[in-house]
Length: 293
Ligand SMILES: Nc1ncnc2c1ncn2[C@@H]1O[C@H](COP(=O)(O)OP(=O)(O)O)[C@@H](O)[C@H]1O
Ligand SMILES: [Mg+2]
Image 1: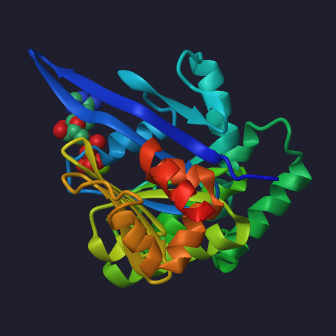
Image 2: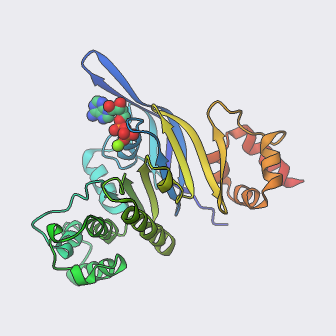
Image 3: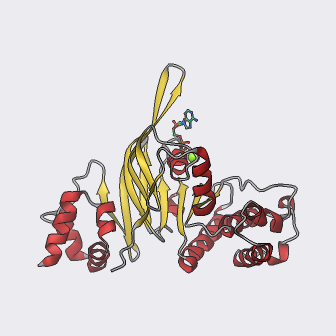
């Protein structure tokens, strides 16, 4: 039976930065899985380690300890060339400040990452550019330069550019932080529609409560520590694991939670990877045992 493997595994990842005499522990023993096709928010206040986490997942930086597995490939010990290759085929980025080339048109910006791809023919390239500009609703603006576009339109170009390589994962570091609320919300809605339509995994960071509300998985980081892993069941967030709150077990909270919420139960029962992602091994066994009865 085809079981959905996580597209990313973060295993006991630590990241230290040396600043003179001082060591900053930017990430402290973070573990979680990212299932294929999810719309996942990394939330937390400014300085909590969100960008550091995204940079690890995006192979831009490497952990001080622990490992990251992307699409089944452990990225520790990969050469910079191998990492660049993995990145160019698997991962795309969307940035807070859009990072478009000011001298290129919208169309040329979207085309840019494909120019280095020898496996994409010119006609395929042109087709993809047109397709993804249309996906983000900017066909009419193909010939405009970034300074002729609004902030929201620029971010749409950046999203089309991110999609053009057909990545498995789009990483977006505070993609709405430079946009007004309404525009930010429409960008997020568009990202979610793309996530659903193309089954592209989206991982975005935010410190905005309202933006988090659109995710279906939540990883909360505070001061470098993972404090919450959550999944959404219907319209309700279930915090399955929270720091300083006992992890629910089949004997206690978890059983109650699952009893009260058949949808959550179904989601967890049907997906062993999700069980592993959301529960520690003991409680995962507990849930499995419970389901057998
Ligand atoms: N290159 C770096 N050198 C030193 N410290 C850094 C570096 N990048 C981030 N930090 C520190 O790591 C912590 C987490 O930063 P960051 O991941 O940027 O947080 P966030 O994105 O949640 O605002 C902060 O204390 C920040 O100052
Ligand atoms: Mg940041």
